[in-house]
Image (cartoon, rainbow over the protein chains, first blue to last red):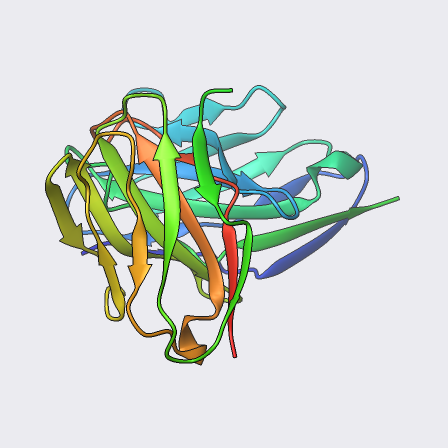
Length: 115
Length: 113
């Protein structure tokens, strides 16, 4: 079985500052890794994913995450955040290859961006 | 708009009542799942389905039933509601395989009193 640990439940940051949201996973087999974002009163949206190949993956709105197999991490970063990035962010893992159905989520990190 | 539709958005139940949360998708996705979201616990998998007629239990299946008679629909039934089932429920679908992300519905906020 796999598990995900998000070390920070809340991360406050000022607008235009850089941010890193930490995610560590545990699995005895190869995994796929995902970051989802949840804006207030909405469902989750896929932000980015790592399947294979380049360990650095990027989203369309400036976020990036790097898969580090030796440290079993998949931290999410953005060099300059905006007020609109305020949301809850979930790291998730699934077996590779395998069904997408068994997606295991972390407990989430609430990113609060202020002026 | 294509996507995952959940109804109702809000529901209040009395302890012991039963109800069905509806979920429908129009993307012809084979994989569908139900999750519950509780503060500080992230999302936990209740039941999932890899195709019509096939369902299986997730991490927290007790007190819930599902069926998948069509590709489009995946209803979640609460047999006898309990206060511990107060939560936000999300339905999600995926095209299939571990390399596809999930499309989530907007959720159903359920309160059991």
